[in-house]
Image (cartoon, rainbow, N blue to C red):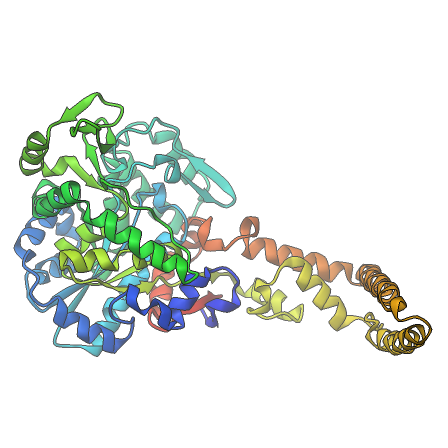
Length: 529
């Protein structure tokens, strides 16, 4: 593939807060740690050098991977490197979307892989391992039970149970059949089908199925996949669980930070609660709340704890306490020797709300790196763009704007009435002066007539443009088709389309090309063709 790059601000697709962060807006400086630069990473390495949980982390991951390591030497090597004090991680995370969900799932992981490679080149004395953190404890099944390939929506129609990572894939066969049925016949189709069927048709948990599929796609890059729904890893987190439930530090610090951001005009994404943990079993994941009589209730389950009972439960069963969206990042950074978190625009915004809470618990705040965002097309579409006198930058404008601009560039007629309006404007100046001499109160009446004429001329310009569009009908239809192809349902390709269509065409070269052309610290939108 070939690549070209444009500024994120030129896409019109990203939030003002993210763009302000990329532009190094000084107002945001108190809400993050080191900047996403090589110099910032040098400082971050120093701050994370004394990470104490390496042995525990390696043992937990070796158990989770099991026999998968036998066929993944690069993964095994990176896992062993985690025991070394000079090894650090760069992490991305995402929900367990079936069949990887939208394309940006893949983009997140490739960004982590490429960033680890770039850091190794910059700091050869250290090791950097890419990590995919599976959101196995998330329970929003409706967000992950579907994907779209070739415009067809594939749905896993089954009741949600507990945390999604614990759900069994025993009844996913119909979704697998429909998904693989879109592949057609080719070597790449057979390879992807084999991966999908092995991952999802072995009655595994969704967490185990996702690990298998992601590992097959990325094992040659040494990607480590973490499932933090683990009693040994949770035991490290237990003291913070106890402290935060009973003293509510995260609620106080995050609410204060959110108010500060909003006063500065920045958006916020998440709201902290008094208690930011769920009670988790194989059957349910429900919020913990404090009742008026001082007890602790697991909502909708008629389950109550006294303070003493809850403290004992946290010590004896830390795996039953599941962090919500504001505490999960803290857990992640506690159990990983992590330097950076790679996320989408919305994630970057809510991480900015968390810095004060990290400071309270004295856990180093990771460098925030927006994931690489990209559009992938082919030479045929690229050729049409250039033949239509468009550019990869201009294609992000709305369809109507592109059509109007095209007609104005290509027309043989002068469609704007600017010169005529200048003449009218001069005439009205004389009329207003004459009216003022007769009666000063007639000035507003003259202005009103002028405004009506200006509106009429604007409407006439629109009619001239609309009439001339008929002379360029074929080109305007081509503009519509190009926009529909590159922006499914009017949005970015990466937010709806699954990677399968691209994998069928490019095979393993897809990931190689992404890894080659992504530049995580350049912060440019990538267009590949």
